Length: 444
Image (cartoon, rainbow, N blue to C red; front, side, top):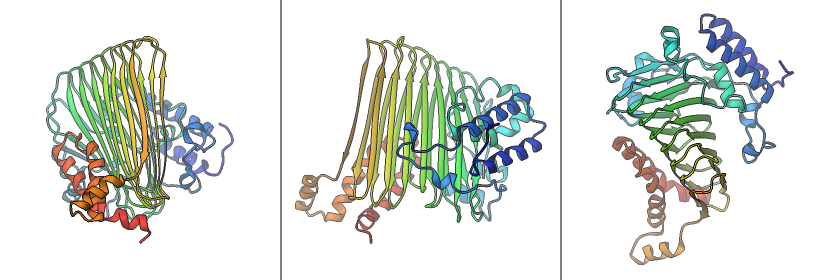
C-alpha cells in the first residue's frame, strides 16, 4: 500500500479495526472492502487541482480526523424522528451514524418486498445482494465512494420483486449522533426495482449534531426492464455538518428513473449523481433545488450516460443563493455512438440575492451520435426589477414582493415532487426561510 498522508492514516486504521470485527462477512464483501481501501489510499482526498473539484475545497474534511460513533440517539424517539422527516407514512427505516435502529424504525414493506439493514441481509442471504452490490458505483476513480465501500458498517437495502407495485413510500432517515465531536457516518444503500415494478424511495438527512458531523454516503440503484423508480433526497443538516454523496443508477429497457434532490442545509455539500440509460427506451428525469445562505457551499455534479437508442432525459436544477454562499453545478450528458434517437434536455438556473453570493455553472454535452435532439442551458441572475416595481405598484411591499418572486422561482421544482406530504413540508420550509433572505443579504 502506498505511503499515506496524516489525513488518510486514521481511515486506514479504522479499516483494519472494521476488518477484524467483520471476520464473518462474505468473501466478496471482504475482497471489495480491501480493494476500496487500496483505491482510497492511492487517490487520497480530492483537491481543487482536479478538474471535477476545481471549485470545491474539502479541507474541512481532510484537515481533521473523523471517527465513527455508536448508534445512540440521546432521547430521540420514533415519533419525533417521523415528525422531523415530514411524516410520510409507509415503511420508515432510521439510521443513526450509519447503522439501522430498529427501535426507531417502522418496517411495514409490502409482501415480497425486502426492506431493511444491508448488514443483516449480507449475513442472512448474501446471494440476494451479490449480483448488484458494487457493480454500478465508480469506486475505483473516486475517493469518497471508495472510502464508503471500505468502511460502511451498514445501510439500507430495498429489493422489490418483479411486477410488484409498492403504493406507499419507503423512507430512509439518516441522522448523526447529537453530542459527539467530529463523527462520520458511512451509510451504504442498495435499491433494486425488479422488472415491471414500481416504487418510491425517500432519503432524508437530518441535522441534529451539536458538533461537526460528516455523512459520506453511497447509494446504488438498479431499475430493471419496464420498472419505475422515484428517488427523492432531502438534506436538512445543521450549519456545521458536512455531506458527500454518490448516487449511481442503471436503467434497463423501457425503465424509468426520476430523481429529486433538495438541499436546504449543511456547511459543505457535494452531490454526485450518475445515471446510465443502459438499454433501449430507458428514460430519466433529474430535478434539483438548493437554497444556500451564509457561508454554505454546495457542489452538484450530474452525469447522464445515454448508452442505447431511443433514450430520453430531462434535467432541471435551480438554486437560490444569498449571503456569501457558493454553488457549483456541473451537468454532463454523454450520448454514445450507438445511442441514436436520443432526446436530452438540461437546464440550470440560479438566482443570486446578494453581491457576495457566487455560482459556477458548467453544462456539458458530449455527442457521438448523429440523429439526436439535445439541448442545454444555464442562467445566473438577480430578482427582476421590473417585476418588483409592478408588485409595488399594486400595493405589495418590497419584502413581500421579493419573497413572492423567490417562491415562484423555487416552486417550479418543488411542484414536481410526487409525494404530497413531502411537497407540502418543503413548501412550508421554503416559506419559513423567505423572510430571512433579506436580512442575510444585508448582513443583519
